[in-house]
Amino acid sequence: MPVVHVRMDNRLIHGQILVSWNSAIKIEHIIVTNDIVAGDPLQVTLLKAVAPLTSKVSVLSIKDCVAYCNSPEAENENIFIIAKFPEDGLALVEGGLNMPVLNLGNQAFVRNSKRISNTVFLTESGVKALKALHEKGIRITCRMMPSDPDSEYWLTVEKALPEWAK
Amino acid sequence: MVGIIVVSHGNMAEGMLDAARMIVGEMEGIVAVSLREEDAVENLMERISSAISEVDTGNGVLILVDVFGASPFNASSRLAMVRDKIEVISGVNLPMLLELAIQHGDEDLDSLVQIALDAGSSSIRTLSQTLKKD
Image (cartoon, rainbow over all chains, first blue to last red):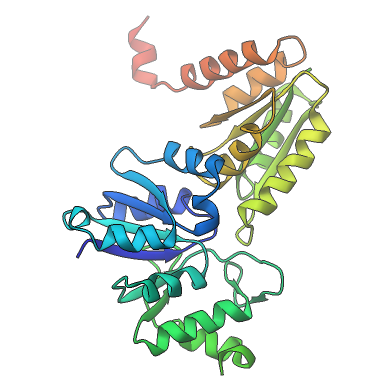
């Protein structure tokens, strides 16, 4: 399977990815996907500049990311997808990406979000997106580091934010 | 004077300033910014931006970060790319900071960048290599 990991992390490519994930998984291609980031030339330049020596970096819109991952070109690569928010993950699946597991990385505080832990703050729309993914049979995990347990995180979200998860 | 900002994961940046003070005494125009676990890159950018206003006297600012490509680097770079006279150097170490603390009042930004790169890399050496030279 070409897509080996799908992570929602609003820091995008950063230390945990470059150091921990890049040594735990053989990543050949990092695709950063978020429509706003893909439309910001400054962020695109910077993301490509920090590519690890062992992989290439693309910055694509959600639509282009799905199209690329389903193309023959992607078949022989190990792809690590990084999007920004749970809503991006749902858009990827609705667009036609085959994704058995969605991993939540850093979700920093944003306006109208509620705290689950130091590293995870979710908005109502983020929780709804995770719920839709869960109902589609996609496993939700929350692993900052590869060594973190890969237990089902939807149960934690349901317990922590029942008003939004119902 | 060129302003100096050290940006790191956790408390390392503050710790480096603390260590530097033990060697060169009180320092002017040098501040630390820390990335916290709960930070978004945008929060960090705001704090670095305030630090720039604090230390910039018009002669430019040198931002020293810990890891190339990590959030302190990314946040600093996004600010440096759209402003003049700001440079970002990754792989900060104490000898680099010490040399800058001594010279940042006298040298311009371009010279300090070279001084920082030289001091940072030449300080990394092994005892055995050093002893062999004699």
